[in-house]
Length: 189
Image 1: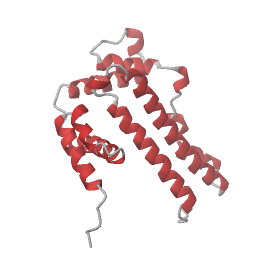
Image 2: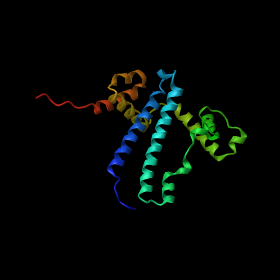
Image 3: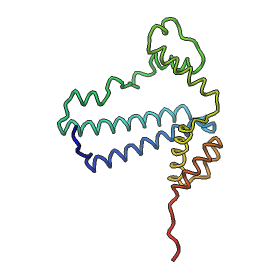
Image 4: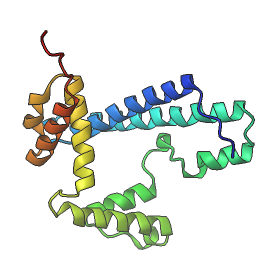
């Protein structure tokens, strides 16, 4: 392993792109709220795909640097984990339908159950559906949502709006995050 640091221009580009992707992720969460019933389908898909595309750009930019500096092509391909790539252009696949069936409490057909990936995704959906019946109290999830919403509220200078669309516990935490991020004003001389 070499110990050469990431070049500063690349580091800054990566930081900018990741910030953009995080902002899109926050918007995905925002459009899941009840007051967005008229637009959630369109906007969650737009922002989720925007975030995914942005993170693909991050990975490929870093990969281009690795290629440029002489990384072995096989090593680069293994780091890119290309076998895990999902192609959205083909639309939802059988595994996605199995996942949705699990979320909705529906059984899979005999044919669908024959594929291990379908069984795994169906089981994941069933677990997620069971978790949805319990209060949303996973501290890590709540903290992540609060950080994203609080950051966006601070950037847009709209902290008060948090109460209008978030569950009370998330809004409370998001407000605390936004307060921490508030720019400190110099003391009057």
